[in-house]
Image (tube, rainbow, N blue to C red; front, side, top):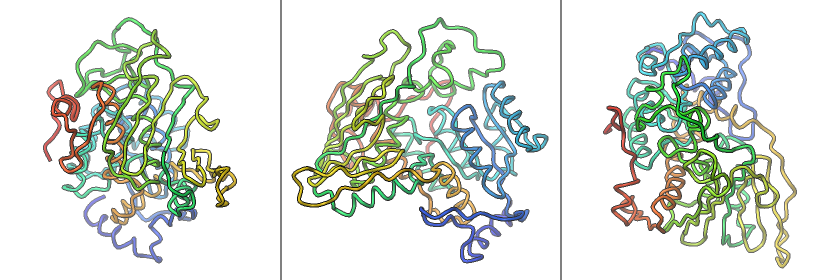
Length: 443
């Protein structure tokens, strides 16, 4: 999308009473009928298409005027499979070029926006370089793999003035908004505790297997990137990267950024005063993992406590749900999950606050992608449902829990200085060291 096209899109956002903008949450996204003008086309490249990157691209292609022109993955078998699937969707794959090096994709002047669905340890570098290259970005959560990365990513978005949406798609679902609005109404009374939990029966670490050669067609050096060099092991690769500190932060940063996000949003909370985490590999000591399969973290705020509780391999979480957020107030408890929300009235309360279960009624990922595309066209950054700044807030809080666990300490956070009060912990954990010649840019 050249300069003239970008100007067209900025002007076009005012047409038809703002038809290019995604309507307020709760209404159906605007749907074009007929073709989209050539100047209004948005060309997308997707980087990392094994899991959520593919889901994100699929959602993007539902938006009128969005074209996929490039795919990038370090695993050739994944690229081949996705090209086959696109062909089966009657998409002309002759116009799509594939890469195993994202830098080659970013060199293309005809790409307007990129989707980043790589493992977490690559998010920061690719997002920053995409912004430098003049691309808008949809990046998967958690936005950064350390508190330091989050800060540089925010600085890059601001410096290069790019649209950056983070894939916390629950922010685009109506029932989540309705639940938070109810919390804000005050009907629950004083809220003393917010419980956030994630029990995931389908998630288990991989088996302990010997190191081996990478599979044919896998550029393992590129997959490692800034992470420490280690021999290839299939139980650290693809989906299982989540359970190793080199690449990610376990369930705390995988699901935690989704669920802690609403715990913080509902309470309008900033950063906690203290953080204390206890956990370990209690459930699967014979499987291959570093991050804890069981973790409880207590966050202290001025007027309430927030408790994070996660468990891999089992589903029996609080309130009969395998995940959720519970706002526990004097008059009742609001229980919120991806399936819906309800209010359970306190037996002794004289306030009648019970609410029946409200089921989910929309597709959060599709809504979230529609919002991103709308802002790419309008350039109204304030309309983003999950900006890099908002995503960095919750990613920072999630990282705090992991850092408390790994340091073995109850930590205090200095809000003004933006760091822990323990300098040794700051040096060791605030920003991850980069390897293999990669450096986190100074922006």
